Image (cartoon, rainbow, N blue to C red; front, side, top):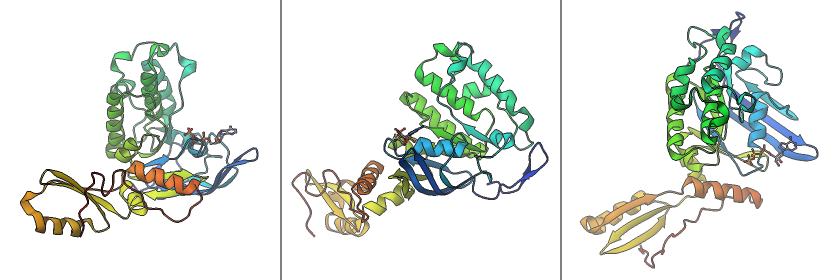
Length: 329
Ligand SMILES: Nc1ncnc2c1ncn2[C@@H]1O[C@H](COP(=O)(O)OP(=O)(O)OP(=O)(O)O)[C@@H](O)[C@H]1O
């Protein structure tokens, strides 16, 4: 983790000690509709944070405000220590954004586009962060080797998205915003993208805030998950922490004498210990399962939409008695 100040091209020291993203009381109103009604969160240096939420919750709006592309109605936002609404080019060079698509450059090739965009970052190169990424290296990193010299307009949707991601990281950003980066990716491209994110965080110490509708992706990538609903952050934590907030019970499943048993309990370890003491070697396929991120997400958004402040426990699909058998204790 880097905490020391470093010099920018203009010679000014930039404070790198605070969290790269700090949002307090963020509000956004479109016309007479309040989309964000008081959003609070932080992203710490080197963290990958995923912003989840139903369609229309305001994820893109939030990201665009943090990127400096949209003016907020109210609240405090500090990105790399500066207000994005008034930050300058030096600040912009340190922030990576993934825009929707480079439609204006359809006649260019990925290699030409990345080399062109890279030139903007040359004056911002420092000893510890050499800018930009060489276009060739970047093209390999995002898996566009075979398309490097094809016209951009001939790329498939998923290939275009890979190019968007490459354009977002060409300046070797300290902080990267990704709005649904893997929409349209096939499973292989998705896996490669996840490897790329790990590489950016592990080797480059990049801080990443991303939105996705893919809960599996959120769980795989994120150090922390934020759920945005009803204009506010209604949950903030690891997938495990969130699951524990909505479901105090875990589900224990096992096979005994050719039959499948299921039991929901708040004390899975004690229950399993007793089960083993009673049945020992006769047990097969013993599993303990907590609520999945999908169970948790749906429960949290539903609670919010129905206006219930209290946390209703997640009911496991097929919970106790799913096969007509439950162990009584
Ligand atoms: N420029 C705008 N003018 C008016 N309303 C807007 C504007 N941009 C977005 N909205 C509205 O604000 C709300 C939030 O939109 P936003 O795109 O931020 O949501 P989102 O969480 O990113 O949704 P999705 O998951 O569908 O991408 C929506 O109701 C949308 O219609």
